[in-house]
Length: 267
Image 1 (cartoon, helix red, strand yellow):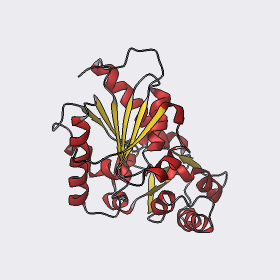
Image 2 (tube, helix red, strand yellow; image 1 turned 30 degrees about the vertical axis):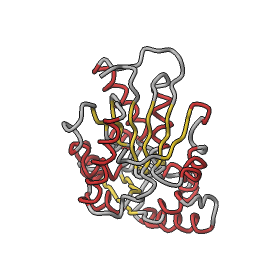
Image 3 (cartoon, one colour; image 1 turned 90 degrees about the vertical axis):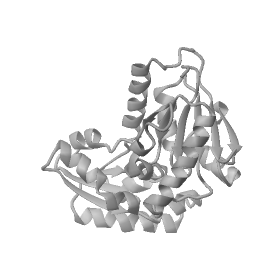
Image 4 (tube, helix red, strand yellow; image 1 turned 135 degrees about the vertical axis):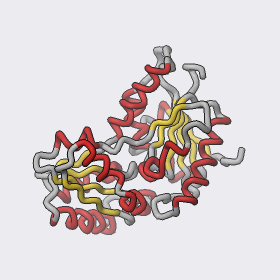
């Protein structure tokens, strides 16, 4: 491994751009290679076997492009088990933080909501992680299958998006939550709408900041932190629909530090 190699960032689509934004802020001198599998998004409604096969293609592609670390900017892939990637490639793998250390100090009533994909909810992973730190915490996980298609479809500010946010927020309001984790990397695209739906009495948190800090700690421990002083560059790649993905990237990234490509994972 060479410290000047890029960091790979993977997601099922555009959601991981919210994590990339945090990574660029935390590691401003690093170069990044982002891969969003927009041809096959969403992953959250697929089987474990389908997800594993697609992730194997993505990580093989990143190895061919010589990344020094991979950040899994997707909760569904992380819950499937970033450990299934580890040991098969020369790079270290950083999964999405489940946010336990972020959300517990913020929740006074220890009634915590989780917005996630159906797959992530079905595993109970966030509840296990939070209760491993504090067994008294109550965790209410809500699948939000309408969010990713609406975000990928650029339906911002539409009645459809507002109705979906209200539908899912109303369920967690009945449970009396005082804190909500956005446990899908797509969801920070609509964080403002989610915060409005819950009102000022509920904190809405994004675990991406903790994920970025974990990536930095791993690089430092491995001696792979880039020692250059210029601002890093990001090559942002998608497997389909490049123009739309670039418009969504403009909502999160400084485009002056990015270049965009549509790629074939078999090349």
